[in-house]
Structures are given as structure tokens and as C-alpha cells.
Image (cartoon, rainbow, N blue to C red; front, side):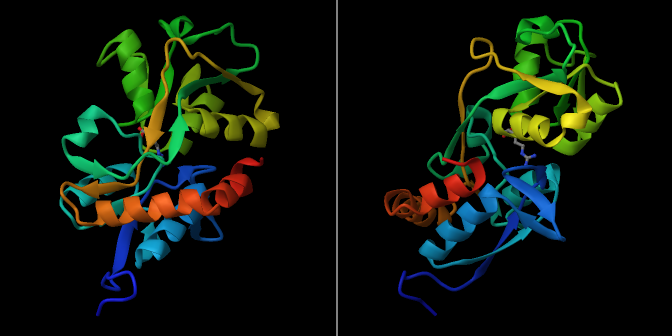
Length: 232
Ligand code: ARG
């Protein structure tokens, strides 16, 4: 039955990889974070309910492609390669890769990662950016299934640095003062990227969610959610 937005009331299934604070992480058994609040607001505006599940990255990617999952929401960067397989909403967040390394590390920029063991989350732009600098299948680029596992590898010394999205890098360093790590910013070798809500190709949801996202950007809801997670 159509509601006031002219949509059916179907509950949409959403996949994510919830070790990516502040965008998505588990709290008391529930997926929470900036992405969760934003998607809930956008979906509500579009006339849908959403059920967000911590499926993991690969299952999310495969599920959205084979349409067993309606939406991927995981700080997913819109890029050319992914646009061949998926549709994305308008961008909702600007990001850039950043380096996390021990406080006493001599690394000053991304070029200094040469011949160092780099931890990345498998299939992410952190991997792509590292490979662009040091070559695909470079043995020094170690790929982990989750974002948390890449940070764990840094903690136990399996890698000498992690390359990940700046807000996640900053949050990790701030929340773990005992780990003695720092962020290293490099806006020359890394370039800005933009997150989008991910749908399967030619999904009818894209237009509806774009319209709803515009509304949420206009009416102050986005700003409210942004302030909640990132401060002013
Ligand atoms: N923005 C990066 C990408 O799209 C990393 C996203 C990782 N997200 C996550 N929830 N683990 O590749």
C-alpha cells in the first residue's frame, strides 16, 4: 500500500561492516554511528523502514550486487570501479585516506610507507591507494577482513602502519591513548573521496533516496546528525 511519499512500506535490508567508528560500530549488540542515524533519517523521509545488519564487507558487496540486500551503508566511497557494478546516492560525506602509525614512527608521508608493512581493510580505498603507490599484489600490503583487524595488526606489530579513512583514523587514535599511535596526514599522495549510499544497478531506490537526502541536507537534519558525531 502506498504511503504519503508514494512508496510501498517495505522494510529494506541494509548490510554494513560495523568496525568503522564513528560511521558504524556495534554498541550493546546494535549497529550505531553516523551512517546509521543518517540512513534512518533518509529512509524515513523516503517512506521506508530499514533493518541494518553487520554482514561484513564482502557479504554486503555481494549481497547488494545479487540483490539479496537492498542497501550497502558503510562509509562506502563512490569510485569508477564500483560504479560499474553499483548505483550510489549523491555523495553524503567527504573523506580522504590517512596513515596511523606508532608515535615514534619515522613515517612523515605516504611515500615513507615504501618497504614498510601496511595494514588495510581488504577491498577498500585504503588498499587501492596503497597499491597505487607501491603496486598491486605488493607483499608489504597486508589485507584484513575488517577495519578493526587492521588496527589490531598495528597493535601487535604485524604491520607498521594502517591506511584508512581520516575520520576513522582520528577516532581510533583519540579513543586509544594507551596505544601510543598518531595520525599522519598526506593530502598530496591521497586525494579526497566521497561516500554514497550503495544500491544495486538501476535500483528504483536511488532516485527516492537522493530526493530524501537533499531534503535532509536542506532542513538541518544532516547538520544535526553531523554535530552529534563530529561536534561543531
Ligand atoms: N571508504 C573506504 C572504501 O569505501 C572504506 C570503507 C570501509 N567501511 C567499513 N565500514 N569498514 O573503501
